[in-house]
Each structure stands twice: as C-alpha cells, then as structure tokens.
Image (cartoon, rainbow, N blue to C red; front, side, top):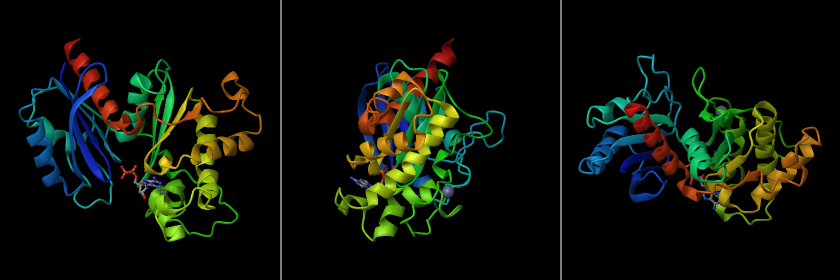
Length: 294
Ligand code: ADP
Ligand code: ZN
C-alpha cells in the first residue's frame, strides 16, 4: 500500500509516503512559508508517487465540519497568507484520491493510538509543546471533533507565584500557550529553552503550568494515557516534574490502578518520537481509503 501523509506544522511541513504498518518509506520537508509556495512543493512531491489516499494533519484552527462551505480550510491563524486558506480543496483539485483531514495534534493522538505509546487503548490525549501548544483527543475509539475541535493549548492556568511574565498569546495573553510554549520560555528568560540548564528554575514553572493542563485533562476526559511531545518536551527533566505536579494537585482524588503506582506509565513521551504527527497523518489516509472502499 502507498499512502501519502502530510504533517503541516508551524515551522515545517513534512510530506511522506507510508504503508499500512505505519512505516514511513520516504519523506521530504520544507519550511512553512506562504501557502502558494508550500502547496507547489507538496503537489510536486506527490505528483509521480501514485498514492492511494492522502492524510493531512495540520496546524489550525481548521474547519472540520463537512457541512460547512469552508470545510478543509485553515480558519483564524495569524500566519501570513494561511488564514482562510483552502488547504484540502487545493490538493483535491490535483489528486483524485480519498483524503483524511484533521488537526496535527489529533493526527498525532491517532498515530500514537494505532502504532505508538497508546497502542491498544481506546483513548489518549496528545499534547505538543513547541512553538505553540496543541492538544489532540482520541476518545472511545475516535478523534474528538465538536463545534470545531479541542483547543486545550489555550486553557487558563493558575499563575505561578514567582512568575511575573505577562504571557504572549495574541488572543489571551497568559493562557497555557502564552505562558508555556517555547516562545514564552524564550521571552521570559531571554534565552531559548535549549540554552537553559536542566536545573534552571524555568522548568519548575513550566511543569507547574503543564501539570495543570494535564490535571484538567484528567478531570475532564479521563483518558487512559497522556502523551507529551513537541520540541520543549525534549527537556528530559520535564516529564518527571510534570508527573509530580499532577500527583500533588490531584492529591489522591482520582482513584485508579493506573495512577496508584506513580505516573511513569501514564504521562509519557510519544512512542513514535518525532514521527507521531506524520504517522498519524498516514493513519488518517488509511482510514479515508478504507471508508472510500467500504
Ligand atoms: P513546531 O512546534 O514549530 O512544530 P517544535 O515542536 O520543534 O516545532 O517546537 C519548537 C519550539 O520548541 C521552539 O520554541 C524551541 O525553542 C523549542 N525547543 C525545541 N527544542 C528544544 C529543546 N531541546 N529544549 C527546549 N526547547 C526546545
Ligand atoms: Zn491563548
């Protein structure tokens, strides 16, 4: 099987070809510049690849309502040229194959559920902590959509008493993304996260905010696993700090065998590593193909 996969992120777009086992056999990536130029490259890549379907997991917000006139578009992003861009239609005009379409984080949650750290489970939540913060939700065996799609990166955390940074979300100031995404860390400390030592006070503050988001997720959705990826999570000291914040805040309230022995198997890194998004897009393509033939 040859399935196309597109992971469109804030920094780069990855295109790949994969099979039904979740193996990506070929890939290419290029920077997320204005959409005209990006689409030329995407189309050129898939032009002679004879794929049977294409799955797309993209940064958002996006229109996921098949009944909407703007289904398949990016909606309100501040990224130059992308607001209102008809991502899906642009590709449908070029390739007569079934398409899967979802957010990058829903795709990553799906990929992890199919082939990664949540394999065999019927629910998981995937966080990415990078240029922005995104949250993908897989529940009762399907990706969660609603009025639009989950936007857990913009939850409002309680402020850390030692943190006087205003927050840099253009919509909400001190929401989770405005306080804890990579650019917020850089603005707060005047250095990129990767340049801060792993015992820097930045990480306790980071864990305080991410821990609250994880706690809210447990309380709202009760997922069977929580997976935390993205560039900032490459800081290996963060996961243990987040687990201990979550334990401290839950304070024994949620009683589950899963949590009783600590959270080392509950709040975890992606099993697919940095491939979660592209494998998830592949999984979306497979579902689209299956649907078209059933
Ligand atoms: P994107 O979110 O754009 O798809 P990433 O997930 O790589 O890409 O996130 C990029 C952000 O993560 C940047 O703000 C960068 O400073 C931060 N980042 C990347 N690697 C690290 C690291 N090892 N430690 C801390 N922060 C990192
Ligand atoms: Zn926000």
